[in-house]
Image (cartoon, rainbow, N blue to C red; front, side):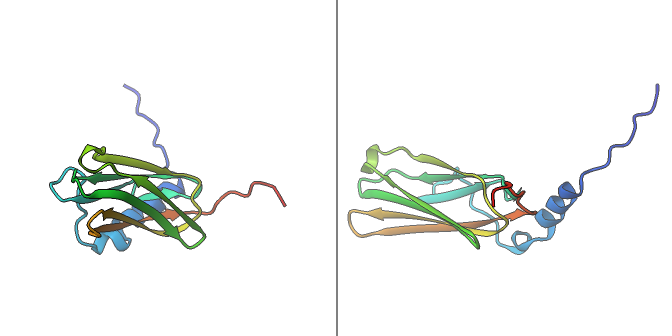
Length: 140
């Protein structure tokens, strides 16, 4: 049987692996998985992506008659975006997914807030990294 030629990994893949293994997330406390009994949880996928790529944030909100608004924001050095979702109390969906695309390089913080009719506020946050250089579009 002929031997298979070895395939070199692209340099960007090595950078992603190194950052994933030794970046700030390597020393952080374990992340809360989305499938918990916590009133609010957040999952960010992937933890590290290339410039120009994107991430998906999945938020799980346990149903409660008091839940009114879910607010989520993504904040980085050259990018900010946020959105609000109306929650219909105990009739609201439990899982909410958001896709953030065309992200420039940097470290990002994701903040999620759920406001209740009783002025109660739930909060969770997480972070992710975007590495590499964004390709120029050729537009002056």
